[in-house]
Amino acid sequence: MTAQLIDGKLIAQQVRDEVAAIVAKRTAAGKMKPTLATVLVGDRPDSAAYVASKGKACQELGMGSISEHLPADAAQEQVESLVRRLNADPTVSGILVQLPMPSHIDEERVLSLINIEKDVDGFSPLNIGRLAQKGREPLFVPCTPYGCIYLLEKSGVKIEGANAVVLGRSNIVGMPAALLLIGKNATVTVCHSRTKDIAGVVRQADILIAAIGKTEMVRGDWIKPGAAVIDVGINSVPDVTKKSGHRLVGDVNFNEAKEVAGFITPVPGGVGPMTIAMLMKNTLHAAEIQDR
Ligand code: GUN
Image 1: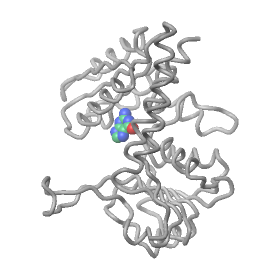
Image 2: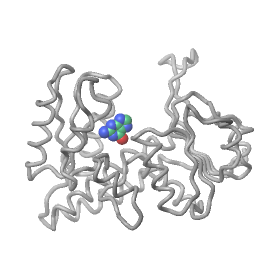
Image 3: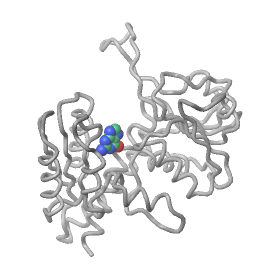
Image 4: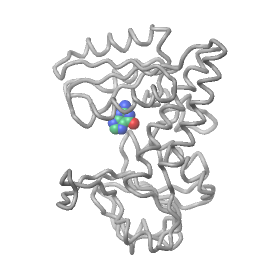
C-alpha cells in the first residue's frame, strides 16, 4: 500500500471531543444546552438508524436531543406545522429533517421553512445560495461535504489550485461539495450519469470526492498517482464470511486505489463517522448563534 490512510473514525472522535469540551464549558456557565431536533417521516430503516445515531451522539456529547416521528402517510401540513413549532421552540437549537421524505411530501417547501439560524444541515435554499456565492458565507455547511473538506485539510492536502473531481451531483453531497471546493479555490469538475469518459476526467484529479452510489465504480487505473481520494459511498454487498451476510464498500475499489493514491479514506471508517461529528459541530454553532 502506498497511500496514507485518512482515519475518519479518529478525526471524527477528535471533533466530537472538542465539541463536548465546549458544551461542558457552556453548561457550566449556565448557557443554553445545544439541542438537536430530528424529524423523521415514515419508517425507512436506514433513515431510522441515522436519526437514532444522531440522537445518541447528542447525548454522548452532553447535548440535548428531541426526536419527532411522523407516520409515512403524514400530510404536508403536518410536517410543516411540526417544523414551525420547532422553529418557535427556544429550547431547540438545530432542526434536522431526515431525507429522503415520502414522495408525496414537497421536500423543498419543508426545507425552506426551517429557520436559517437552526438549519444545521445547511439544506435550506438560503443557506445553499450563500454557499454558491462569492464573498458570502453560509451559516451552516452541509455535514457530509463539510466532513470531506475537513478530512482533506486535516491530512494536509492542498485544495487551492488543485484539480478536484466530484463524482455525483446530489443535493446532499455532490453539489455542496463542489461549491465548497470552488470556495477554496480548487478547479472543479462535476461528473454525473451523462458525463462522457468519466475515467478520463477522474485521471486528471488531484482530489477525488466519490459520491455516486455505485459499488467500487472507480478503479485503480482511474486514479492519478498521489491523488487524495475521499470515498463517500456506502454500498452493501453480499459476503458469506460475515455474520450479517453482507459488508459495506465504497464507490472506489479500495484495494486497487490504495496502491496508486497519495491519501485515501476507507469504507467504513472514513467519511461516515465525520457526518455526525460535523452535525454536532453545527448544532453547537447554532446554539452559539442563538446566544447572541
Ligand atoms: N439523508 C442522507 N444524508 C443526510 C443528511 O446528511 N441529512 C439529512 N437530513 N438527511 C440525509
